[in-house]
Image 1 (cartoon, rainbow, N blue to C red):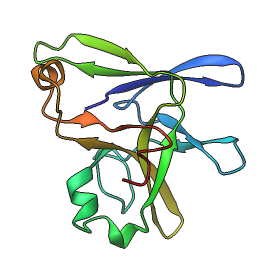
Image 2: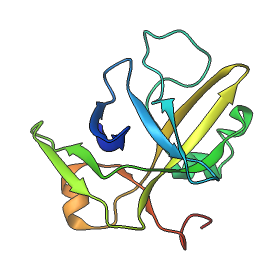
Image 3: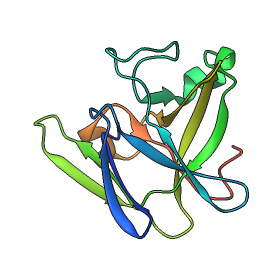
Length: 143
């Protein structure tokens, strides 16, 4: 379900884990720059946006996020981390031209990014988790 991400920020590799209340993810902007946004909301954090750090693709398509002005974005990360059922971490590197799909949600002044997840299609993915981050390229972003 993507519990961690590695990305470059100001020339350094940053490792961000969702449980950290200061976790942030880099969003690709239209001008090619990056903007760091808070990664989801933890139960103990104040705010109106949904708790958690993930948005199911099927719930987005069903309109459950519509009240939060959802914007599909590309998350500029190099690797993401999944934990298996035994709690062991596994890191997955993205190829050039690939991103994780994110959803920027907004409510008033509150804005956060959530990792879009889908049902895993490959046996190796299903063995690890029942949800998998949606990896996109230029061709799949609008699908």
